[in-house]
Length: 444
Image 1 (tube, rainbow, N blue to C red):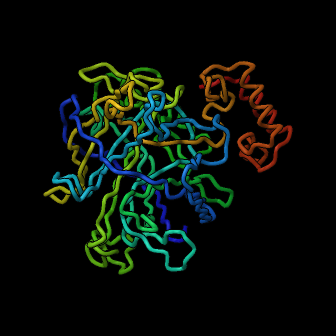
Image 2 (image 1 turned 120 degrees about the horizontal axis):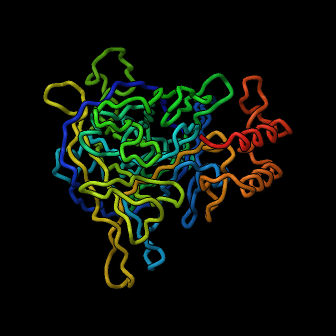
Image 3 (image 1 turned 90 degrees about the vertical axis):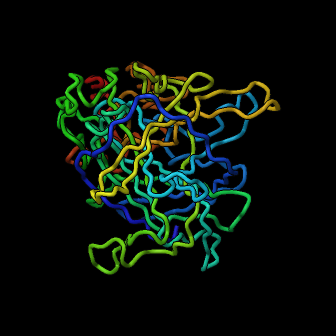
């Protein structure tokens, strides 16, 4: 990837928002053919960027780690493949063909459940783009579109219910990527779909690793966290903000907001405080930008709560689940810059049709996202589920899996070695001892 990826750390105050009804509004998914154009690996510390072009029929898995390193995943794919469908969906968040006021500068929120005190050191992000790109150096890789960017924010204490979304959601960290690639070569029949892994942990004194759902004020080696969320009750409902649905898991979420070319001064090359002077990109390059749908993997729980709307049930989605998401706007008449929640939406709930010739199916609204831990979410719990993911129970299966990965030289088994207890890049008895000690201590 040749364009400049700018990554920034932003610690923010609680978002302000308007309260809305619990029941979501049904939307239609965006219809278009997607082509997975490429996958990008970006290292925060070194600035290393590796672009892998995706050939037809290929499927790029995120990072070359074992599935047990996943700590939360809603991976993309056809949700009704067992019924014969291969269709995938995306949501055109910035869509110039729509008349809604949210067709520009909209913010999309999605959320789920995760084990408290979870450290994240790699995130997978993605975007869909109909922007025409160029390749001026003829290396067959898109150069990136000037002025086309997006902000990704990861949040604590989010589960989408109003008014809790405005009262309790706390941002942890923000990444802004600039010069995002688009469609190259330009293809009127498809939209380009890009994925990227952001490696947040590093050995050069730079780290943007973050902790979700802190309950003990111990960052566990992470650089960023919101301390002791279990003590906070900002909405005064006698339930800790960290766990609105009271299921023992930490509520968290993520959001994305696109920046279209020719709308904002992104790089501040003119060194002023006005985002409307020195604007980057050509406003004529405005085009559709969106995100793809995913499907939760068993063992990686999403939201499940009581109320007027059953957001989603944990586990596989096929034929049984629904999901909701929130949309917001940062374009306010008062110029405050606060987010105003426009409402909560869904796509009708997942419905598979047994006969592929009888019509289309309705997708669930899970948006693709993948989180990785430095080693494992709860270090000793690394296996047990049928898909190889952690099952929340410590037993001989976890020990066997660790020893197997260790013998294969897998980097995720490097758990210790440095004086501060962090991984040292070598696999030896120190790592085995650290795993067994963690196993004996149990999970939080």
